[in-house]
Amino acid sequence: MLRSNDYQMLFWLVPALATVAVIARGFWLYRASLTWPTADGAITRLDIERKRDAGWESGHYFCATLTYEFHDPNGRCLSGTWYKNFSTEPEARDFAARELPVGKPVVVRFNPKNPAFNDLELDSWIYTNDRPTSLNV
Image (tube, rainbow, N blue to C red; front, side, top):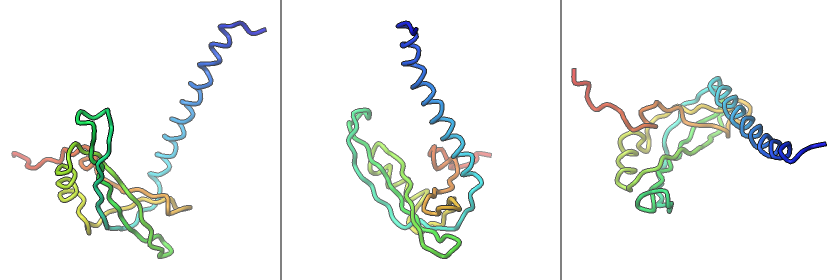
């Protein structure tokens, strides 16, 4: 017969196992995506949207969404989006103009079974916005 502390343990065990399973699946999908083929594409559009969020000091932030297009091995034109959040609209526009302007060639990694499932292949500087401006050598 189960005691009350057994129920409490089961109450916490089930969500903990579910969380571990979700993290493991995400890691597995990430590792699998590293073997996906790549295609050449290009940035085709920039949209900047003001969004509300109490977590930001100003109560809002700006989301820069970049649209890109590429062709799968069968020649079909596909598209995808990538976004990054900023504190101000000028920061978002400056970043897009500097790192990913409309027309810039990009590399797209896509699922060979379903090319509609894809993502940009970006270097770490684009994610962290810490690209060195000079080498100071």
